Each structure stands twice: as structure tokens, then as C-alpha cells.
Image 1: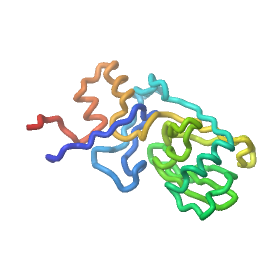
Image 2 (image 1 turned 180 degrees about the vertical axis):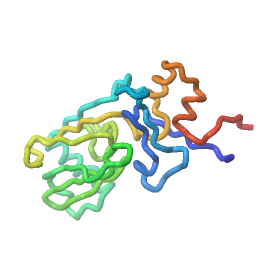
Image 3 (image 1 turned 30 degrees about the vertical axis):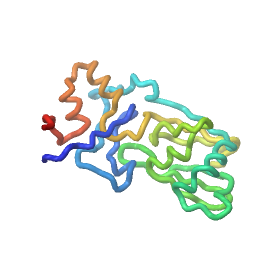
Length: 196
């Protein structure tokens, strides 16, 4: 319909791309829809060749508390004096593409909701790298849901997951799909044209 598409992309969708609203809230576009990366009726995905198709990130309780103290106030309303010490993390809801929509953080000073891509910026590695994606599950070390010595994130994908999956595009290309087919798959409703 005339305007240029904002053709966003990520490294690895992990099985399905996400609609923009799932990750970025109010930002959306009709061509940024969920697209499955499943190969036909198999249990394989075009992007499962990616190094971070599946990943595990362990986080000690000390690392988690350090992250909350440093980053949480940027994404949630934190009381004066800081967020306190973590007691529990749990997934409150997931998006239609299977990503974490809301991650609840309970501390000795309150309960805080992290939504969408904000989760990745709080749950960083000790070196400061953001969490690979929001396509994950959370495991704690205690059966009662308490954190014990820390948490384990088991996830898929790398990046926000919106638009073209770069490793999926590689997999589709190796399977013989043309660049036109690949772009039409990841950006449905768009067309290619020359800029003048």
C-alpha cells in the first residue's frame, strides 16, 4: 500500500516468530505477524541449525539479586531503598507465539511484573549480556518454588523474535526457497519494489 516496511529481524526465532505487540507492546504492523518456522509436518524447524536454537542460562541467587538492584527500577516501579532480595520468579502468562509475556519477580519488599522484551534487560548474565530471548521456562532449585541458590532459564532462540528469522532464512534458502519466497513468508502482505 505504498509505505516502506520496517523490516525488523532477529537471529533465531526458536520455532516461531512473534507479532510485534507480543514483545514491544503498542508497536505493531500488519506484516509483523507470527510465522511458524516448522518444516512441514516434521518436528524440525528451519532455524534449528542455529547455535542458540536451544540454550540454558544458570543464574545464582547473588547474580539475580545484583541484577534486580541494578536494572529493575528501569522497568518497574521499585520502592525507595531498592527492590529487596528475590524470593521467587514465575511466569504469569505467555504470548500466542509461546514467549514469556509477564515474568513475576517476588522479593522481600514486593512483587514486580516484567513484560515482554524488558525481561531480557533485567535477567542479564554476569558479564552484562541480555538474556537470549523471552522464549524460555524457569526452574528453581527448590520444589516449593523458592529460589534456593538460584534459577535456570531453559530457552530457545536469540533476539526479540519479530520479523525475519535470520537462521530460518538460511535454512529455507538451503531447502531451495528463493529470496522472494523467504521475504514474503516473514513479511506477509508486503511486496518488493524499486526505490526511486
